Structure formats: structure tokens, C-alpha cells
Image (cartoon, rainbow, N blue to C red; front, side, top):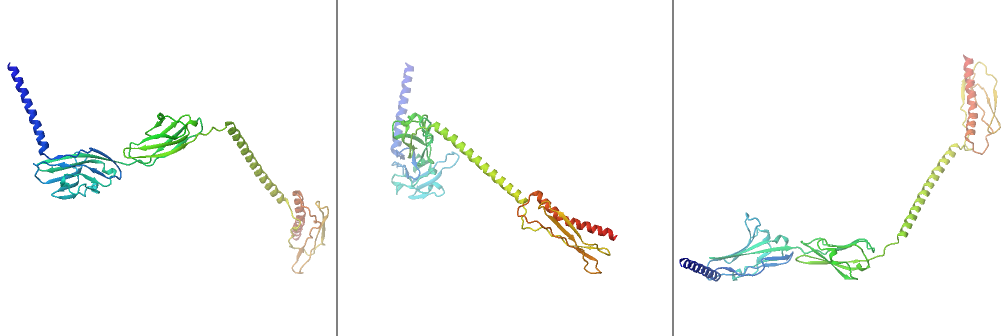
Length: 391
């Protein structure tokens, strides 16, 4: 009996405490400061859009102190202070310009003391992605609310193209790529026109590639690619054709004929080059052996020599010309210029009979030069003989 009465006392005490907690909760909800905004705790916006972070409040009759409202950006590092954006105190609005994010921010209500302390941002950017805290205080009541803002960039217009051969029977793939945009980006290919084509399982939504392993006429048509993320979407189109495969035999024959023509052109070029070089060599050789008929033979220079007391009679030399078949003659005439000078002048007679208009060969040229040099040789011999006589 004693144990039973003890258990009943404990149960009654627990029920009493529960009733007290419920009463106190109702009293606090009725008599304390309360933020009544029921908007989402996380907002996602596209870059350039405007946003309003809600913060509506309801003070209790017991809250008789001054109204203070603060909007701040919470630091992800708990050891750092939060950055103040806007504040309202004593009927005055304050913008904390030391915070770079405060530009373009304001209270959405002209008078925040009327129960609406929401924050308005004119044009958001990725830098505005953060967690914001609204704090409303009116002594003795105080309440706070946190709102997370995520700013994303819409995907840019994608580019669609075809990779691979559009020949029937060959593999081909369609590609879709957006140059900018906050991830994750999702790509989706859809057939716009033409017969039934590739199945959905063959496309990769992360890379934007649609693979067709065996191209056919059934895959030809107009394809649409759409890229999207949480804040927007863009699309592009590409037309896929299906062409018949080329005639392989004709391709092989054409390749062979082209190679043969190329070889023939090279051979003709080499032959023309060889003929030109050979012609130039023959011309240079013939030109070096030619002796023109209008070039006179070199004249013998006059030679003065000393004679003895008396000069012998003039000598007449006759030489047979083996080239023209005529006789060549010259004479040694000794003539004293002055009795005291004892100088004699020897004048050879020029060769005659060289009237042929034909060009001479190499051997004939050598013979011609030998005949022209014969008077000089005789003259030198005569000088040497006179020298010996005088000695």
C-alpha cells in the first residue's frame, strides 16, 4: 500500500510540472517579442534580380523599451564578428558603409517601427551569397531570424555541334556546351523532327553529349538541347543528316590515278631540268672552242738589237701552213737608224692565207698559234746568235 501511494504522488507531481510548462509557454507567446514571418529560410536568386528577406515582428504589451533592429551578415568563421549592414534605433535608419555588401540594401518598409523590418537588395550578385540575421529588440523582448541567400548565374546560350562522320553506319555524337552558368548544369536532348531516333539512355546529362554508335537514316532530323540550373535555362538546335557511304572502289582507283599522275609530273620535271643543264654545258664547251674570223692574229712587237760592225744580208724564211695548205713567209730586214746608234730593227712579215670563214677546231687552233709564234722564236734565236757574236 505504501509503494502504491508513493507512485501516485510522483505521477501527480509530473502532471503538475507539465501544466506549469504549458502555461508558461502560452504566457511567453502572448507577452514576449515574436518574429511572425513565415517565409522560406533559404532563398535562391539569379544574378541581377532583386530580393526581399522577410523579418516581420510582433511585440508584446510588456515590451516597453526602445525599438532596435539590426541586419547583419553572419561570418562562417565563428571566431569572427558578424558584419553589420543596416540598423534602426531611436527612429533613425543607419547604413553601415564599411561593409561592401551594404550597397543597394535598404529596409523594404518606409517605417520599420510598424512591424516590418524586412531587408531589400536591389540587384544581387554572387557576392551576396551568405546567411543574413535579423534581430529585433524591444526591452525586455528580443527575437532573431536567419535567412540564407544563394545567388546563381543563369546558364549562357549553349553551342550545339556534331562530332564524327554523318555517314550511315559510322558512329556520331551530338554535343551541347554552355560557356557560363552556376552549377550544377543539366543538359537534356530532345528530338524536334524526323523519325524516332536515339534513346534517352545514350545521352549524358552532365556533359551534354548524345552518342549514336551506328548512324542510320532513322537518326536524321532536328535535335534540341536544353541546359538549365536552379535559376534559368537556355537552348540550342542542331540538324543531323545521314549521308550514304562513298564508293570505296572509286576512291581507291582515284587515289591510284592521282599517285601515277604525280609521279609522271615529277619525271617530266626531272627530264626538263636535265635537258636544260646538258644544253647549257654543250653551249659553253662549243663557245670556248670557237675562234671568230674577224679577230686578227696578234702582231709581233718590234725588237731592237745591237749588231756587229757589219750586218749580214736579209734573210727570207718560208714555212708551210698545215692548216690552210699555203706558204707563210717573213723576212729579217736589218736597217741601221743612225751610224752611231748601231741599232737595227727587225720587222717580221705577217702570215698570209688565213681567209677561211669556217670556225677552227681545237687542234687547228693550236696549230694556228704555233705558226703565229714561229717568227718570235726565230727572232729570239737571231738575238741570241748576235749576242754570242758580239762577245
